[in-house]
Image (cartoon, rainbow, N blue to C red):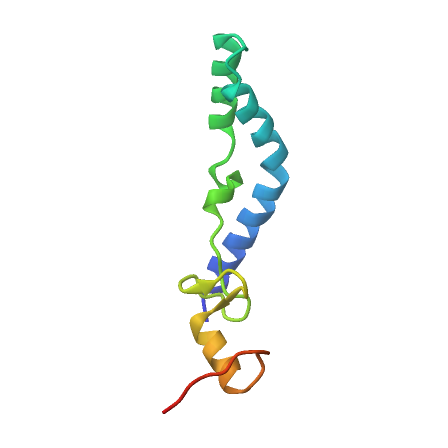
Length: 101
């Protein structure tokens, strides 16, 4: 089980990234538009740099929904390899057959 503070920090990042996404997209569009004057593009770059770092979607970490584990998380299931193995052993994951020999 991951620390609660790490899980909460990641949840705050998700929320902040979701709220700031439209503004970030607008600023990035201005920066990428070559037809705009250089001063306007530079001002947009500065505004983007002033935004909180945690408002970027790349700061969000994929975590297991059950345990909060940050590594070896399958995106499709949103579960870590350990959680999938445990649930698969109990027969709770449809279509998953855990081999044992």
